[in-house]
Image (cartoon, rainbow, N blue to C red):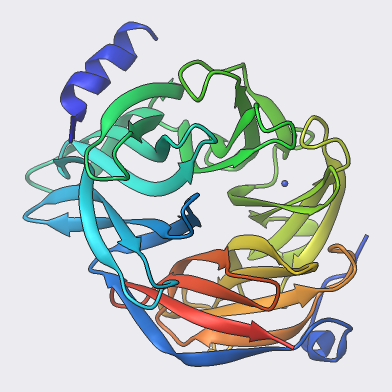
Length: 365
């Protein structure tokens, strides 16, 4: 378990063309999805994420809150995600002074398991309860015993407060099986946020400088909540939420960019899903047997926009992300901070916080 008071001190010292989609999306081409069984409990926490390990089991993570402590918790499944057991505490910190969240587990070819997370410093006014962020960082911890014990590895990104921020890390291994890619969102101002990537060739110990993959050509969008998956070959797609006034008139929508060179360069910004007058946000994306699946949370079923009562939905694409359709609600309101895990060529888990971390199996046909 990591004491982030020490990590914070050390870090400070060394200092992702389609038209807007409307209700006609359900008539567009794509692969049909259906739910399989009920929601499976992963644990008492939020922001669930998971990846397969080399032995075929699954490592998962979520953020728990106990006695004013934020706790990054590792969980494990040995039966294909039908049951989950807590196996370790990655990190914990006092919520009044630290903000630990957005865990993302990933196993390296060496067998070592990494856990990326946001790890921010903040103060809380005892009288008003107002929270002020004073320092932002993405931190990575590692486990060499299957996720039971964890140690600090590195801080790939760090920025001082008060309006800057580093959020929602996502890890993937490049096709060379040597270059580790870290994707995350960086807030430049309250009206501007970009999607960034850094790389590591030593298992996450040291990192390159950041390159911008979306949002860098404008200061009027808020690109965030980034997810990336392989389309085929060296072709990637990244999805993210953004407030793009040219499309959604001030509401969040889901957008994408693509890369043909395994993440070195990005472009081809497109709309994935942007409901008229409502919000779609917190997306993720995965490839299930050649079909792309994008998840998001949305308030489009309500009479008026309400971030606090959003449902979890998915759309699919059979043409590499050029068009999306066959919308399915996989988790009713209130469902937040969804993640995706492809199981095989016809199924996946849609992970979500719905009164705790849950996993819903979805079948494609």
